[in-house]
Length: 135
Image 1 (cartoon, rainbow, N blue to C red):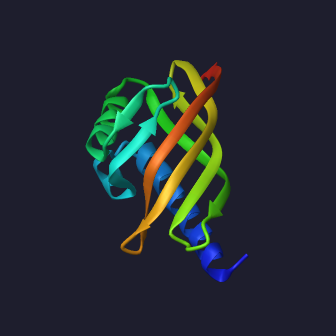
Image 2: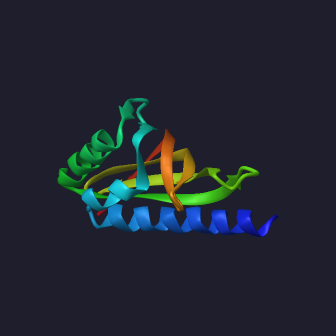
Image 3: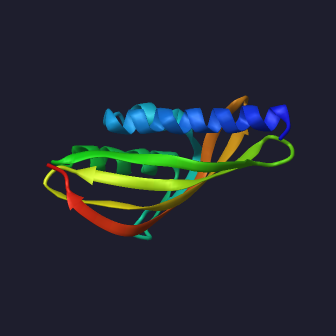
């Protein structure tokens, strides 16, 4: 693997860890720099959310839900294009709530390097399981 690709993979993984922390902290506004203005997210239920503002609004609504704990995305792989400007992140996700079953599944995120920073262009989440309640 070329050094630039290793740096890109490391950067994408670090950005994902930061988004996990911000989600756990229920801080929707601080997620804004992680999304392109025209980003698209297909949520685990198949619904489409278009645009960073709508995505941040969806997070804020989730954070306001009683019992919502967090979404954690665990990166399994990052593939970077030859130019080092685009990356595909694959992994597993888990959503947890107190007093109700959690959800989990797989995801794919497309990252693009914009003015030196990795931002999310699109994400696809697939819900594959409903788990035990979180106390």
